[in-house]
Length: 441
Image (cartoon, rainbow, N blue to C red; front, top):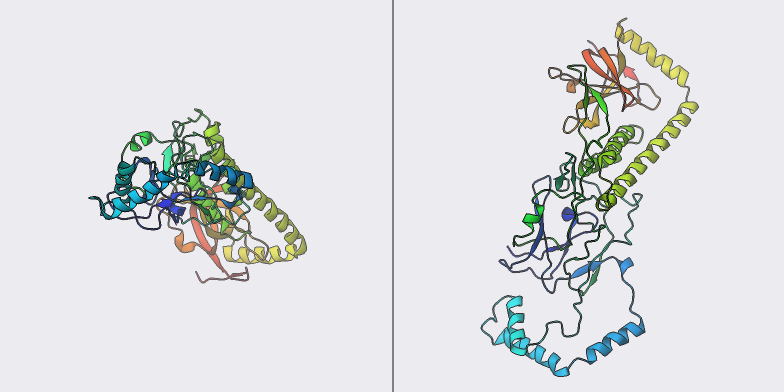
């Protein structure tokens, strides 16, 4: 169907592209050269193409400066050196081709071809369409800039490492409002490693897709390299399989999956956010990535996310220490402990705390586990994770103070207990004030 085609956003990828390449839609059936096919996790399909002639290009303001008088004079001098009749014949030929030739109702490319045949002139008479290659060397990549939320079901097109690690088109920050330039966008032939639209790892068959010719919606870029991951680079992180009691390895998250988790944790309240758990997953993925120039840009962005999480985790730790020092902690804990002992009816529980869902361990890519948090007026903290078996349904007990009977195993990577429950009793409900109230059982 007719489309204005979208100029690629260098920071947010295909789904974040929003500026058109043309003021008017390109006719349906126009043939374009496909560079790469990109399919997102939600099923949306994009084609990265070589931009057609006369497409508008966009650059960051930081990459554009005003021409000096010497540069202006040099350009005008070169333009004046061209034969005047060439320019006049070109304008006349375009008029004739548009209004009097057999292709007057054809596409713009057909009209221009007819004008070229009539005059033998070059379409770039004044040299205004010098090829330009967009770069992002001066782009601000700081993670302290506002972060663009990512939908839970949205991720970039994933590819596959030879070692089994799945990865994707680099997740990059949203750019500032681009500046329009009259230059024609042409394919990037430099093969630069910092080309932001080149995946850090290419999937098999991606080069074959570039040989097709299909109407597209994305701009051009250059060739990509295919680095490989070092076999055995995945860190040994143990999680206890509660059914067999043997250690099992958690699956590695791809960069796009890490970004989705990051956005979810970013929206959590600081005192309850799972910073430390997500830090562990970032470190595992970084340790499994290949150390080569092509993936360095993606690695840098993941390390920036990791640094932000570590800063937030340290800030929360200091804030909690200050808060605990300023509260009458002993009295509050004594009151809560007294209520729990009364509700427990002299039963000895493995863990007692408030049951809440986990954002990181939600049962999709990582195992389904529930967080067990402390109760009382002081700032809550995670004291363990509850991993239910297939027969357990703990969703009805979320939000309540519960007593858990079962076997607790220390997870070395989380440094927390993972509990396999035999019995979970509701002891009380948690009010907004953080106090517990009895429930008839």
